[in-house]
Length: 293
Image (cartoon, rainbow, N blue to C red; front, side, top):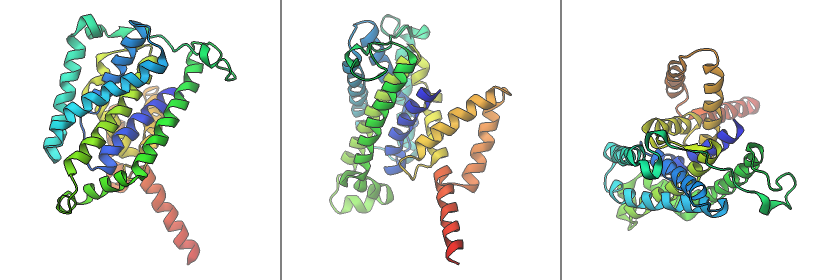
């Protein structure tokens, strides 16, 4: 479960670059997750490409499709933008579902191998093993590196400008900023890291399936982002942690997990619109005011 949480945390934080910082609601972020998963799985299983090459290649391919789709999406705004992202994601899902000779069609692609870590024999505990435990260590390292890069992006002048665009795109464009270009760059970066998360997820599950690119996967990551708090960098990662743990615990007692999730979201949106991180931040501020008083 820890590996799953780490991967989904990266997936959610990548969406937060669009949603939390850019104000762009994407209903189709799973498209790049699925593209990355299939690309990494095909390269490693069919072509025996090393993990160190396959994973970056998967991310770059997802980024390329994000650039293609984003070129059209950023020309629209609000609900039209969101619906176009969903439309492109449905195309990706349909292709993965029907292209039997490449993706395996409805049955997907099983037996994706764990990476060979023999080249890391100098690292304690990693020498040449192909197991889930050792892949967890590798996943944490990759996810941590990706989160560090994304953190640098949102703290850069580009990240601050993206937030300005979210707050007032018309005024930002009036002062000479190419709003569409900056939104497209954010779209591509988000697609890149979603693709990397997808590649890791395919290996972790030892298989890649059309559901990886289907709309419920997009809704899951959207819920994670809102649950944790899209106003903070690590909020979506916390949302991923909470959602995965709740899903596992509640489904072990009842089959009505979607009902419980719905009640949770309604409560959260009304009482804590800033998500878990926003609620905790508000609690800390109230405690500080109480101490000062």
